[in-house]
Image 1 (cartoon, rainbow, N blue to C red):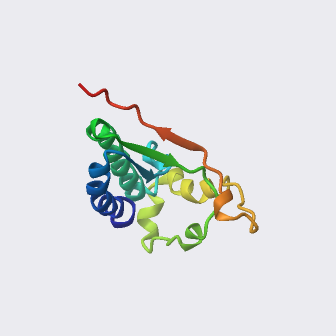
Image 2 (cartoon, rainbow, N blue to C red):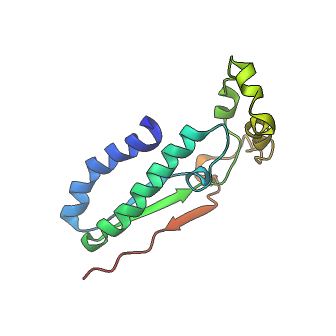
Image 3 (cartoon, rainbow, N blue to C red):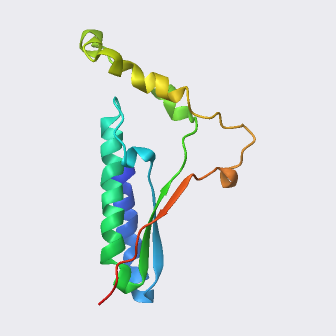
Length: 138
């Protein structure tokens, strides 16, 4: 929650006074497909992205009359080093009670496209830029 939700909250709180003074700006929230769909084994990650998307949607309505937009960016899935840092639970007996669901996290990463080593950050593909509908000001 600290990185995926509270970090953006702090950044928003820092920049919003400036955006309000100039009556324009765009808050860009980097989310994930996990902000819309729950995946077994990554409930806390999904919860942090759901929270971020809820905040971004609320901002889109609350700030529209002030000329400030709120957008959600959902980059497409690709392999990153974070998947190699996964920790296996020590309590295998409990994990085994999950049945076939326990295999989903490991199997899902097999379907991520491999990111070429030569791909520059500026070339990373974004699969979904979600512009939220602007609220109509009265």
